[in-house]
Image 1: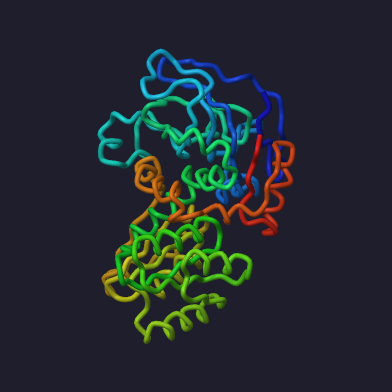
Image 2: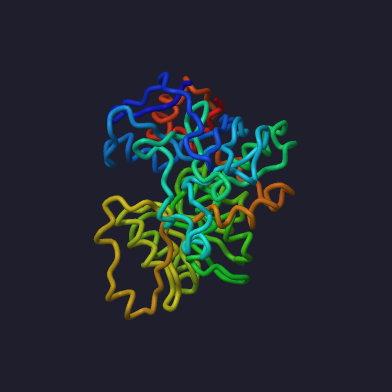
Length: 347
């Protein structure tokens, strides 16, 4: 089969690789219908996170089960399914508590020795604990299929950030980051009942999506100017919660600067250079909570799926460029240069 591999910084290739096979009784082999490129993939693309030459890449996908191992009980060939970005066994104590990303037998797609999502097929370990079945009819609805793909990562990650930020009905929330996760954070905050949502971003195409997803205000300033703008919008107090979806030192400083005393920051931006962005003294003095991390999206999919299926929420607009498998290297370049928000891949 053909799959996307990374050989070094800015060196993404689509190559012939061995076909996946059932290796354990709990495996399935899945034919990929939709995949995408994540903003976190760009850190490997830029050489800021280590990868072995020839390593697979991509962790967001959905598709059709082609083959199921004898130990798989919940899926059969022909089932349409979505995969969260981490596989998990579904039976350990962490999975029982909903923290599937800490499953001792779990792992990330594209890690060494595993398949990546940006290819024609994937071997899925622990299928019963990992995959979620989708209605078969969705396979013929292009918009719905694209919206459902967001369940594999960005929608659940935005939801995780909103929960970490303590979003509740009537609250005021700020969102730092205008990428796909930040925009899905806007959608999640609206879904959870936030009355006012302030999106921080300066790219109109993205802030237009933020407004469509529920943002009531947009702040284009950065740094101290952004802090002043948010404070002005909130009578000098700041927001009850902040969704931090970038992961840099500056973005975390901004988040802590615009949250009100007693508020919460929900952080899901993959940290890169953010080691000094958190001042525990400031957080202590102002009673600020910090919650977040890697989103256990497998836990959230059953809650979010009905709202995607009935159209209550539609995250599909975050995908603004579609490529075939051969176009994946160009898709990375487009996202790296910010000429694309999030690239949809149709193998």
